[in-house]
Image (cartoon, rainbow, N blue to C red):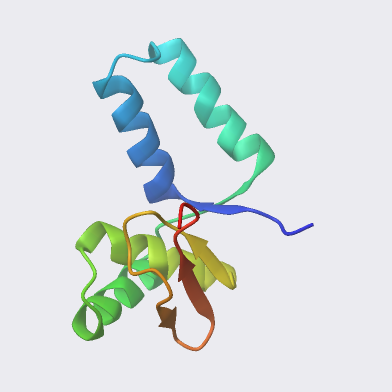
Length: 103
């Protein structure tokens, strides 16, 4: 089975949206964070990842936040990035293919 790596940015976005929609309280958020870190590899937003994100924004039409997710996926060695709102089918650095799992 393939391992799952999640960007710190994805954890941030999930938690922010759950809080925004009042789906969990802070105890629930801490539990969710523990689940992410306990079950999956979580890629940190290091200076190297943020610099790669900057390079990606120069060459691709990615938002700031999407570029950090793509850069973290590249740094983790991922071959596939699942995203419903990025460029489905885009191949980045001849390594990473963005796939919309809902298509």
